[in-house]
Image (tube, rainbow, N blue to C red; front, side):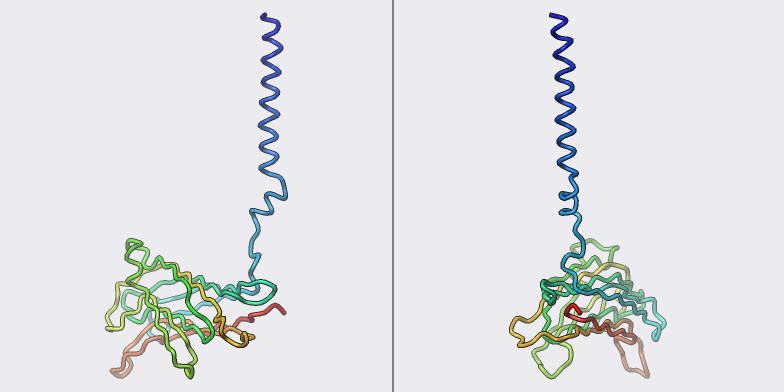
Length: 206
């Protein structure tokens, strides 16, 4: 009986080791790893940007990247990812000006990081116009106070998703937007967006 047990136990151990080895091998097969690790699969183009409110001598900045996403080489969506900082003395904050043919589909914001996540909505606003003669169809404002009072300032991350207008007859060759920051009092006149950067990015693969 003891001899039989000595043979059975090693056999069971070998079977257990083989089973564990098989599971690990299946989990880490190259094709499995590639499938889960795919990156930038739908990215057509990307472009970085950075702007600081130097005119108003404020530490308000916006730094980030635009991603053009789509299939078959044609843009379907644009994602704006920005790291922002608003000076405690700045009431102008940061604004993302969106061109015609594009709509804001979703906004994620952690600004200001010092506040509870549920309060972040209070610091983000979206403005839209139906006027076809203006250059900008929409504007997303973060940390901007239109009563011209500084709103504490802070840091955060903003993600803005844009989708193309399906009713537009043609897709523009280039997407252009402006990110503006800062504020100042110039000869008694309140000025928002004292500094800005224009970003232009192709919407189709070359």
